[in-house]
Image (spheres, one colour):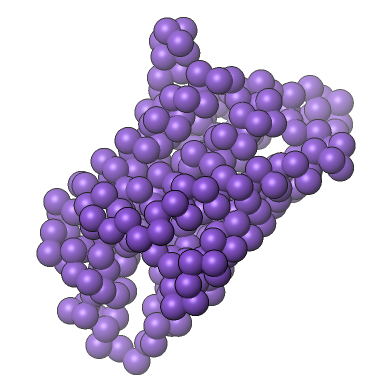
Length: 264
């Protein structure tokens, strides 16, 4: 544990900062697009149009984080379900997984509390409500199934793309496109989380814990199912980084350099 903290603390700090920035971005754009006093509310944009813009904003936020120098160094998980899935795949050590997850939870909460302090009554308005994720009108069952399905698809894409030599550098773009699509189309079903720490960060200041168990369990279940299916294809998992073709150090159980050297 001490060695992990001593040598890998920069990656832990990056994971905390990354999810914090994501939550701040989500808060800002939610206020700009959904608060009744915003310019967007005065336009002819309906709910689908505003969700589309929100999806584009958050998809681009995700892409920027993945391809930032920080994201290239930590691997750009920013999600406990992602980290724990790579732990299951043997790419992350136990202590690194523990501190990654702790950092993600702390960073998400910190980012949301900072956004709440700046945006105050705007983010607390019921139309924004701290961008909390709650089941939609179709109920708990649909919300749970949607979270499982979207998380399964996201991790399936991450594993397929990041472990395919000619596509691996585009992993962040694929992820950003999925985030944008999900917010646009799936958000009415579950609020679109795929991330337990992200949902907790919103639920805490909102005091809104409606069916919170969905957001703790469904993302992890979906991603673990995707990992199980992937390993059954007997294709290799090279590393836990979403973007690896860079000069930043790698703290994971990594076979990326070996595979590239061999032309794999």
